[in-house]
Amino acid sequence: MNAILQATGLVQQYATAKSLFGKPGTVRAVDGVDLTVNPGEVVGIVGESGSGKSTLGRMLLGLETPFSGQVSYLGRPMPAPRSAEWRRLRAQMQLIFQDPLAALDRRLTVAAQIAEPLDIHRIASGAERQERIAALIHRVGLRPDQARRYPHELSGGQRQRVVIARALASQPRFLVCDEPVSALDVSIQAQVVNLLRDLQEREGLSMVFISHDLKVVRNICDRVAVMYLGRIVEEAPSDRIFADPRHPYTQALVSSVPKAGAGLRGRIILQGEPPNPAARPAGCAFHPRCRIADAACAAKVPALERHDGRLAACLKLQSNQRTAA
Image (tube, rainbow, N blue to C red):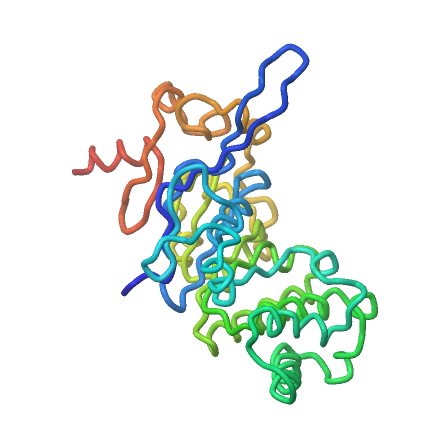
């Protein structure tokens, strides 16, 4: 199966301001990420805040140029940002934002905002344009009369449906959903997630779904990549990640998902806070918070290697695999 999108060795770093007693430095928000998205597949990206999820999503769409590495779409390298080829490609690749109110123009009606991609990419005009707008509004579960409303006249869930309709207007093949339900109430989250899953299956869309909510990820994603401090530490099919996580960080994340009647039983509590990306720990970045780390973990950076049908970056797993062999 040919991948619809492939990222190889992606690195993104930013310069930091000079401190009172120090020199300017750099922060690596994404550090050597490889990722493949197959046609019709939903890949989840999970991790704590500051792990590089959103930065990775923007690079996959060509909204940020990587410091190093490459993104390929349908086998061709991502064109230079703002170039004519990049603008044409934007019709096939769209982003669903985290905050629908901030993503929408409060001065424009719902219909006008859904029409923007049609006008920018010159997809339809006249009567066909109006028919497409009406069809998109119906497809995302909004009423026809809501086309004349403004964003502030809609609920949070309705605004997110408008954002989804606008993203679908250019008939994209690839979507990046950046925390698309985190600002919504739990009951509305389920409606939007079900809508996205239904649209993905009906349209055959490929998606990268970025979230810190593992319950949502489990419901919608086929495969999950777990990020910690800019790197992928485990990647596997969704059912395997949740049934049998292997990396200690993934185990802690999965244990935090509430289970009926379980209380705090089986919960793995991580010690401390995520490290400062500008002062990355030596060796495995997770070792200061890891309950099974030893001296070797503080000295060597683990490679992302295959273990029992999954990818994981953990020296303990690698050692156990060599012992078993």
